[in-house]
Image: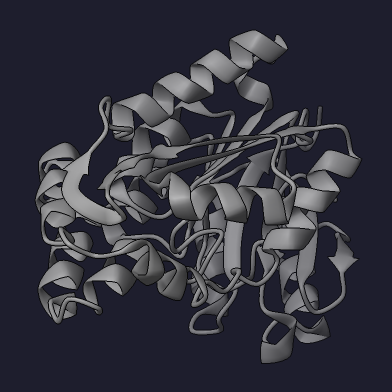
Length: 289
């Protein structure tokens, strides 16, 4: 195959960053015609050497454009596994709960350190959940009302399903939030942690086993086996350190507006992609849709 790779540029169309002048530059740099997947949002060009990504990214800086390279073959995926918080939704729900206890700043600092991979996920989650002891079912409902979907989330899931893919929400957060989000978006499966509730109040404890980074990877493997789907046909997306093993196990692992270590790992991976500027519909463009 003369062009075994695809160079894909994605952006928020409202930014105006990805225009015909950019397409002209990419054509000149790659020596190919390329084409628009969606004007203003996604442009791709066939390339023979994946190393050209860095050249193009450097040439386009500092425009807010994502530049990724992918294998030309087998781009469409058969299974989507997605993290929830700061990926499918715009919030970190444990931080929202902490705002009701007056300890949001402390909680947010712990959450950020955990997502950067600086604190063991299980240890951190147990400690953070302990800070929520005493909150009520009414408090859970209050914070659930703050949930807003990440732009492109509904289109991503609906389009994947329309193309025959299976979908799974795989969250290190709580079922009380994850299950309604999964139902709202139409996910086939939902996996998350369960907080203990006694007499209408959070006990500050979690039900075991805790869904951590290793468990996310194991769930991905189990789903692939159940559905007879090869790892190469899996698309996984997330933003934090606890998502990294799942992203690395997928045929296409996407670091979406991710923490630096996750971005770096996916940028270095031949099966990875990084989306910092476009919305979640970029994951459809990564598949050539």
